[in-house]
Image (tube, rainbow over all chains, first blue to last red; front, side):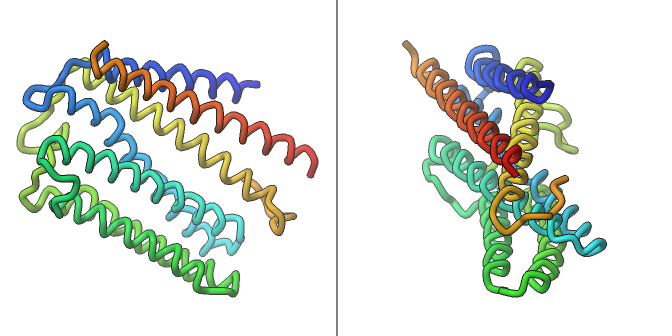
Length: 221
Length: 36
């Protein structure tokens, strides 16, 4: 019952975030209403990083304990991360179309997210290429750990090292805090809401795979 | 009505759809878990 209440709170929370993004938050200087995409684009990117992190944690757990359920959860979280990365890329390219005139410019930020997509696509190619369960789980776990090491470089470091068309981060070392307080409130609320949505989706896919045929006797944590 | 409100309404409908779809899947899984 308590969990259902949380889901209903999430429904209202996200509805309020959506209303806040379009009504409460003011248009940004220079970018106008286009900047409102930040309330969806950045949380999508944040959730993808979070999902890849959780995938890496389950991979480390698999390598330590050897339980197949951990490998399954690592793969499920990587899937969620990949979906959210695709959504972040789509929202980013919509923003690019209306600010820079093209959906795709091979900007450092776009190139790095493209490489990230390729890395996690390779993770699933690897999983589908190895038939033996234990061998697949071990190789995929090692791959997931190495793949996550590249995430901070591709998402946070490389786009800041090279000159980019992408707007400055909200908090940067050079220019400090840059967001309107109302925008910041909606932005933080959106981050919280999307994190809750990710937790719910991760819970659903984990339970769904546990009730799927062939997983009897596996622990569902 | 301005374009912004049209986008807002579409976004709210989309979120409502996603929410009820997730809730429906959640309840289906709960039924399956009880069966097992």
